[in-house]
Length: 187
Image (cartoon, rainbow, N blue to C red; front, side, top):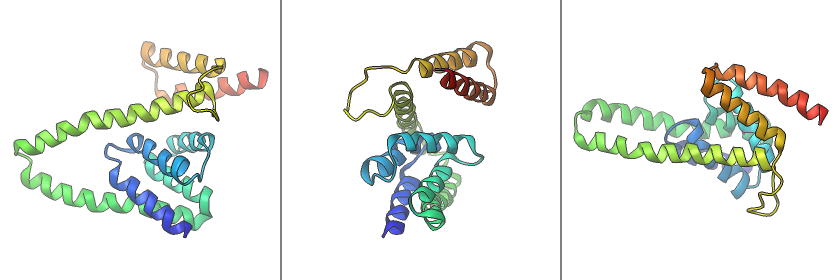
């Protein structure tokens, strides 16, 4: 039963996550944390972090990690196949349709209409992770008291370095990781 639930959940994520891995994060959170309670919000944030750091698409990496956390290696395979399967069919059909009808104004209108929705989904995922980082996992919804100062300083410093000097984000992530280990071991 768990394999069917994993497959169906990640099939839906693969089907409706228009805009890439970041746009899929709220959908994965809804399925894995809210709906099925396979993960806590902290585990979800950890899996998203690992999925972002490992090579490959974030949604597929997330499906693999959620699957392995939930039902071992077979769960990872089932969740990954569920996530990839709709994309293969959709991309094949859309490629055919786009090359056939790309000059139509309606096609261009659909593409322009999807852009704001994708931005909103990415922003939702980012805001959820920022709130979790700053305030931790709260048992009372809406309780945002007690900001974590180390997380806030690391976030601010990382954002400042990225915007001011346009440093490679990998270096900023590595530096924030080292600084986090040092700061959290001292405090």
